[in-house]
Length: 87
Image (cartoon, rainbow, N blue to C red; front, top):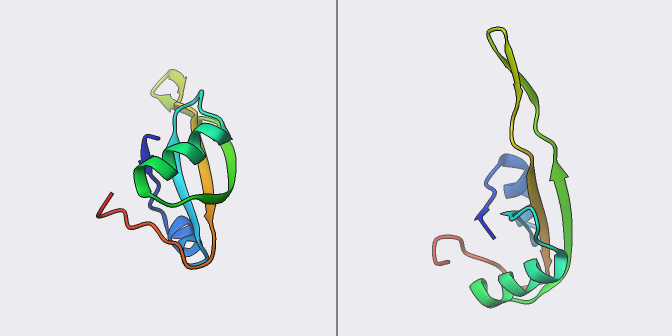
């Protein structure tokens, strides 16, 4: 786990028990679930993973690409929550 993602969309999802994290590119669902359990003390019900491809960018005449990121959406059972200020 690298860090929690705090966007408007991810904050709306937190109200229904879904938390978004930026994770290592080689992490899998089992590793993310274990990391959430170890770091925050809650056991996830489901873990969904997505890879966001880096956008193409230009710096004058030079074209490049932003880094791709891997995100995990962790669903907790009803009643469980994660406080990022404590973690």
